[in-house]
Amino acid sequence: MAWNKQLGKQQKSAIDLAYSTAREFVLDGKHKEAVPAALRALRLSAEAYGSNSVQLVPVYLLLAEASTGVGHLPEASKYLSQAEWIVLSTPGCSVAVQYKLQRSLGLFCAAKGNFEQALYHLANDVYLASSAFGLKSIETSGGYFHMANVFFRQNKMDVANSLYAEVTDIWHAFLVKSVQAQEQILKSRPEMSPLTEDKEGSEDRLTEAWQAEAVRVLNAVLDIRERAPKQQPGETARVLHALAMLYYLIVDLSKAREAGTKAFGLMKQLPQRESLEAVGHLLELINSKPSYAK
Image (tube, rainbow, N blue to C red; front, top):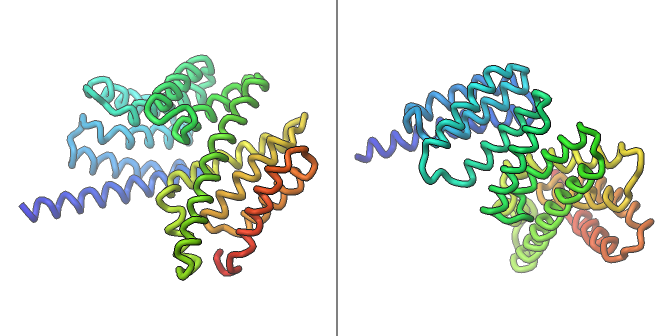
């Protein structure tokens, strides 16, 4: 019995390693390199859980994303169909799996240029994610972001801008709470070393997967704000403030300082002083960290 349990742990570790390796490649835009690792994760998952298990759905979705990234749309369609079939044939399949399937279907349709179908799936994504996690959750924000991208590609800028603002607001609120929580930990345990402080203060609230998501999404929104023909300094400052908090939490202090300084400069031109004070306080926190902390 102990031997079987140990084997199970080894299998799970091997699956997790293959999946996380593939996920990292996808997040880095290295879709071609992601495919072999994802296929290994699929094979190991099928051996461990069975070929029709809901445990395989995240791997199929990752394979679909990687295949779409290298332009292999027939393969992506095949993986998505398999994932969809498993979800439909699994009674009581979790909402977390269902919203991710809808998001993947939406992104696949967008990649094909089928924008109306993409928006249909992404609306389902938002509905499912918000029903489980709330309208203002970071889980739901991903659906808003991808819908905004579709509207942007359709040149429907009013709707796109509104959704990008919603995405920024959700991440901004989440990061404000994360920074405040970390401050409380630092005040109550001042004897801890800076690097341990940062790890304990943010890791539970901002997993590596969410870190990567936040960096990707907020930088994409910032790029759109900075390139817009009609500038909205308030929105640009808000996304810069969010990025400064994010980089502070993941201890990338030079990027945190750069984003915070830019946000502060823009906010000085705006009437709301409360935001200026918040960014000023964040810059004080950033500058109080030892320079060796990345």
